[in-house]
Amino acid sequence: MQHNVLILDFGSQYTQLIARRVRELNIFCEIFPYNHFPSDLSSYKAVILGGSPFSVRGEDAPHPDLSQIRGKLPMLAVCYGAQYLSHFSGGEVAASNTREYGRANLSFIKENEIFFEGVSENSQVWMSHSDSIKVLPTNGVKLASTHDVEFAAYKIEGETTYAIQYHPEVFHSTDGSKMLENFLVKIAEVPQNFTPNAFVEEMVAELKEKLQDDKVVLGLSGGVDSTVAAVLLHQAIGKNLYCIFVNNGLLRKNEFQNVLDQYKGMGLNVKGVDSGDRFLSELAGVSDPETKRKIIGRVFIEVFDDESHLIEDVKWLAQGTIYPDVIESVSVKGPSATIKSHHNVGGLPDYMKLKIVEPLRMLFKDEVRRVGASLGIDPELLGRHPFPGPGLSIRILGDITPEKVRILQEVDSVFIEGLKSWGLYDKVWQAGAILLPVNSVGVMGDERTYEKVIALRAVESTDGMTADWVHLPYDFLMKISNDIINKVKGVNRVVYDISSKPPATIEWE
Image: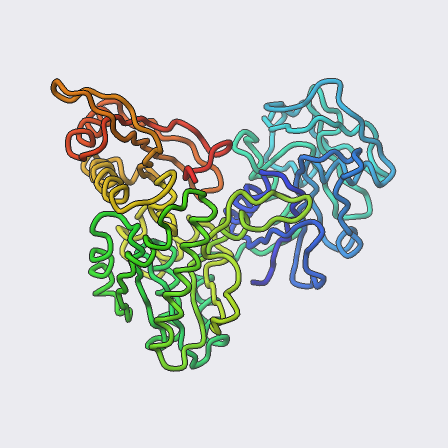
């Protein structure tokens, strides 16, 4: 992609939100760790320095090498970035008398500044820092203040460098997107050409050049990511794409056959492989969630290795990896810690000679859906909720048995079909049921029971990086709870998860 914006990650959980806001402006951007970014910056039009949980005054403060950036490319320094520029360029940063977190309002804005065009005084911004800039860096010019922070924003004369001590990317900064637009479009003059149609055109051309006449094998899951990846690849290489849908024994009820039926009219070459017994045998007695993920990833690759040998001269394995998978699986000293591994991120074992191609690797989930719409994929398929690659294994807490899989499949079916029949499915980003590793006492008829507990989970999100729990109607929850307990043998209690991400994750494992 040309006309990139480079975002340097210093470990803030808000870094991904900066990327989301930039992408919303139809501008392509990439996130790199502050200490490991491309040496060739010729394709970049602007750089954004993100926030950090570290203090610039600390011994462990991240120190980026800005020698190829500062004064050479337009740069916006956010929060930690703003303090870093001040502290190490002739200014002063000190601990604040009060920790500055939450809402604040701009009380002063310098007149005739492009960065603040369309932004009024008293505009709300979001603070998140315990240090504050006391003295501006050399050639620094104050652009904005709040009641408690004198240097809320500044620029450096002689450079196209701007700095702000608040977070424009979060929802609570009401004019944050406008400020980002002013910087990127009006100041840095970055073209707004990152659209779904443009992505499709460029990616299909890139795939044709990369793959030539090679054969590619792709694992279809029935979900949005793998489907969009398949259609992109099909446009690029046609009959040289071989799609395989593996039943790992951990799919939703009847999903194996339903997914195969779903692809029948799409022109894709799809083969179904039923390997449920193989996966469940490997998972027997395993309770640790990371171990379960790794086993499923390993067996998944082994199945593909077996199947790929049946295709003459296959060279590539395609995957539906998307950007949040990549971000959450990258961990370096400083930037965001790994939360959990993803089954479809990373390399292949030495014995498997296939190269990896990931056409969606740089897209967020909502961008994948927009690309899918531009490809003409059925809206019902594009609206399907995300489903984890490891399937129900990470929704069964503890060890996995065929009986636990049966229980959860039945419960999940009641929940998902209930959401659809009540007209709630499209109002939820992701939903599922979790089988807890506890039994509870119940009464059915005149008999005491001691059976399984189910937790229901439904969240709202745009890309999976953050999520809020959905306020489902009480009448619906009451009906679903009754249906689950009455129809699914082995369950006598249902609870509803009202945690948001962060601090919780969407899945329980």
